Amino acid sequence: MKKALIYDPYLNTLGGGERYVYSFALGLIENGYQVVLAWPSRKELDEAQVRFGLDLSQITIDEEAYKLCSQKTAYTERLSFTKEYDLIFWVSDGSLPFLFSKNNLIHLQVPFKKIGGNATITNLKTVFINKFVYNSDFTRNVLEKHLQPDKGIVLYPPIDIDSFTPGKKENIILSVARFDSPSHGKRQDVLIDAFRILSEKTKGYQLILAGGLVGDEVVIQKLRNLAKGLKVEFVINPDFSELKSLYAKSKFFWHAAGYEINEQTDPEKVEHFGMTTVEAMASGAVPVVIAKGGQKEIVVHGTGFLCADPVEMAEKTEELINDPKTLAAMSAAAINRSKAFSIAEFNQKLATLLK
Image (cartoon, rainbow, N blue to C red; front, side, top):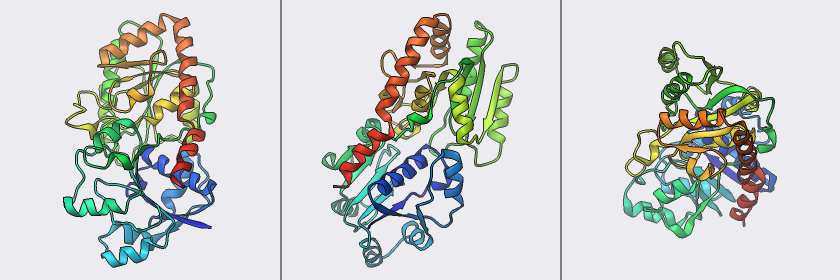
């Protein structure tokens, strides 16, 4: 059996990027690979199973591999260690490693403005890299200013769209995003501003802000203070079944990452793709999101709205509330659009990386 190693320095954050990595691992297993995860404990793996609703029981944890990947390692030691694998899937932190497996794949989830390290050594490292795997065209376009275009491939995050089904819709506007995202702010404050504007004209709706939180609740308290007087509910660290239920009964999905950010000068601070947007669309919730980063690749004409600011978000939502026929048509179109990001599509493209 072929053996694959996966290294992701951010596994303990349990965000969308980590779900991507675990899904990649499952895709490798489906293609006959034994998967080893370079990580110090199984705790995060167990937590991920609950958070993401994935069966990760076949993945092996290797603490020694984690030490060799996370620390500076001598060239000869890295050569000896990595050449034992048929494939290595390595999540970049903005730098490139020396890898010597038969098939070295570097995954870039963040559109770093530059790749760190000595330029000459970085160029040497790329000789051993088979493919740069990007999570969106947005990420790819930023990074290919520094990396070879001929080695790049976009592999959109896989969404288990069959797990998401529309339920009986209620007057709910939902947002699902980390409250303490380490890479870029999700801007729940902007959503509260938009909801305040909407609430002045339209009554009877509720805003639900759901998402993960690793640290303390200071950030949540600030948002609660901002939302005083409004019908806003906070759902902290929901499990997968709870998320599915929220998606199923929500009419709208809001997302504001990247608001007030210049995509050209600070690309890493906008939404790199937008997995939760696709999940919401698969559930029939119409996306009304800030037009930045990967969101523009997901929401196309007739499936939702790309907005410039909270005022426009409120206006577009109000338009659809007052036009149920168009809202229903957009909901159906959003469901259909979500199929472009299915696990089947992901696995089909993943297979091309294994040849």
